[in-house]
Image (cartoon, rainbow, N blue to C red; front, side, top):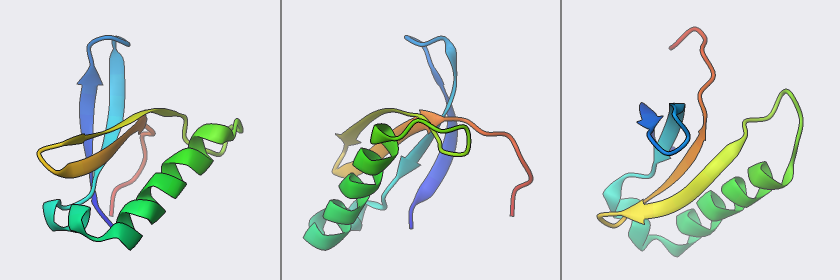
Length: 75
C-alpha cells in the first residue's frame, strides 16, 4: 500500500518514481519493516524485470522509496 508519484531527481537528472507510505503507517512497526524489506530486496537484485531502487528515506514522518520510473498503462 502507498502512493506512487512521478518526480524528477535533480542530482541524477532523470524522472523517477517515489513510493510513499501514508503518514499514519509510519507508526506501525510491522508495516515499516515490510516496507524496508521490500526496498532492501529490490535493491539487492539486478534483473530487467525488477525496478532499480535509487534510494530510501523519510520526510515528515512518511517513509519513501525512490526507484526507476517505468512507463505503462495506469489503473
